[in-house]
Length: 198
Image (cartoon, rainbow, N blue to C red; front, side, top):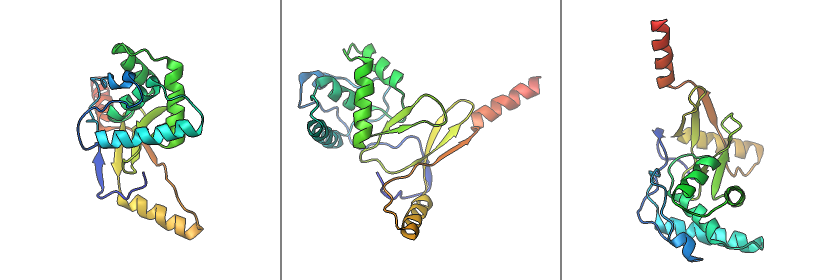
């Protein structure tokens, strides 16, 4: 999660390498799960198996059941690209006929965030946004205050600042969060067009 980014470029979104869908070794429920057609990312089977092992260990440590629904939610998240909210995740799974309750989606997301396998963001709105995080490089966000579009970017200078501040203040920095808010080019163009016609 805290890997140093390589170049100062915009990425929308961070892309997982590899292909395949991978099934759950826990139950047939997730093994039959087909990721959302709206998902743009390819599923990295090796990474998914690592994530499942970490999630399994977390469930065992907390004395929680290893249900097929929980693994199907995990697999759906790791097949997705970019950010999503609970309603998008829940609706996508229901559309494909997967029997999962909204409460299970919320509870599983909480467990995944707790384990560090999923990141939770507010982005200045009441609606929480999530994204997969295990094995993906640290990145930051620019958010449009008009249309709420989120663009990810990586800049190695931010990692340098994080390291310098940690050394200076004698902190072992685990991660950081940087969100920049503004108005995107599309929204500015639409506003300009409205003003021209007014």
